[in-house]
Length: 320
Image 1 (cartoon, one colour):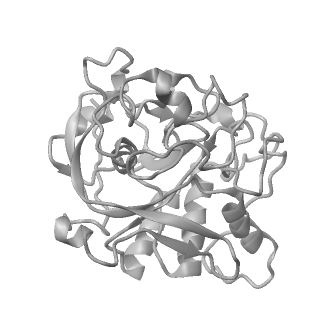
Image 2 (tube, helix red, strand yellow):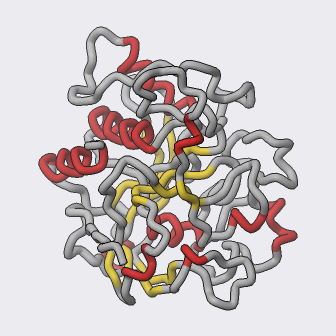
């Protein structure tokens, strides 16, 4: 079996913060304004805790890469209430693409989109940003860190599933009844084969919208089919550290997916075919011309890294 490399963020290492930290007055829901604009987004506190990752052997829709289940411990963090929207992402793109006075030092300019990545489904006004590769999502996080002085990143696969479940052990955050999915998610049965503005369906029990459906969401981990076989119970803040550029992991399912693909435990492996129409040589690291069904949301660890730790993080995850 291939050796698995687990990496615990330096921002979380040795910091399993107990309930008293999670109830600190500063650890609460808040709005973050992006400097130099009126655009803002909402961050929701996700308390430290323990949960069971993966699918039960009793789940009829389970897949091999979702097993075996393990009990995982997580440090507290904030998570975006919504998927990152084009209103937010375009500030990043325009700032570092068009400005001659780059304020976001150490952030490389992105390549320009070569087609309408939205395929006419909608852009400004609350639609989820989409069609970026994981690299583009991480570069947004780096830009946001430079703009705000606050360290943001993608969630780990474990953090994402923990936040999605919101205390539930069922197939979906709301239970096992697939018929209720229409109330919480845009998917193949109700989407009209397009994504929709964020926040139009019911949130999960912790107040997070569109965790299921709409657009799938990049997480930090390298995808590996047998990853869960390397985990052990009570692992703290696990992540599958990347060793290659592809594949990476996407969670949550999308507007064009079936109900089975929107299960909390479902894992999607990124595919190079998502960028098959890219005419550039070499092909862009930023965009996926054939993946309007993929976007992302961000998290902010309660324990912030030092500047050196943050720089090391971005070097590690962007160095491919």
